[in-house]
Length: 308
Image (cartoon, rainbow, N blue to C red; front, side):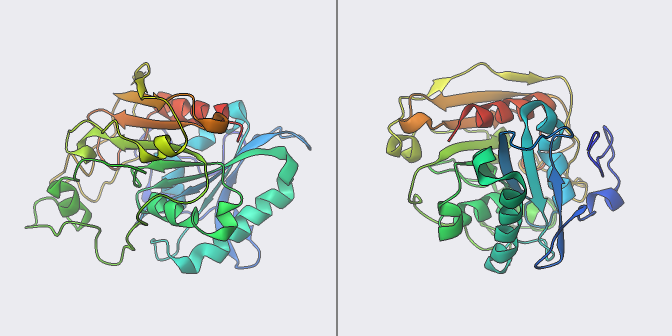
């Protein structure tokens, strides 16, 4: 597992590699997925387990490089399952497959050895995570949710029209209909039941270059303190991937080429039961530029800092 299989180089990841489905097989459905973990993982060792869901129109291996948790599996003792939706859009029909993947990991690692279990989802994968959190299977297991531009449990500025224009096939091809493209199930409304840690990460341009609101109903539900700004995360290195299909013309809101950047980090301190609620905004970025290494590691550190 060092380096992880089917790993892109530093730039220009070939399409044939991006669409690879993974090397692990979920035996009940026969569907493949990626499973990354420390190469020296020992029996009985405590780990953090993450189920990482790609967005609509994407692939598991693109997700692995958009948010490259695999690069930090060794250092932070992570087990990461990255599945694939064959029609490239998650739906309720995939729930059994996702449950089977989770059960497989729990069975192999051992429930007592999983110190925490997080759902991670980009875009429609984040919306799907929000829906899964409200189902009995995941409600009983999930300790945290990291939404990568997949919806915030609280208000956000309106998404710019240029985002929807690009999402629907090109930023310069006429008027766009506001809202998700056809075939994308809407995200759940209101707050889910239960309690879990929640991190929302997004690009500044996805917010229409507006500041993220201080209000967080989820932080209020967890009894957290007033939001505080932490130190910025500065990256001198670009991420791995981007959306090469929507660059002519490009859209700031949808995302341009990967490049270095700075992320602002906000936390709501002193949440009940040691939970974490935070917002992370990547300045000058849109929806599809892959996360840079330092902001990726910062998000991983936040996740592993929460034991439940």
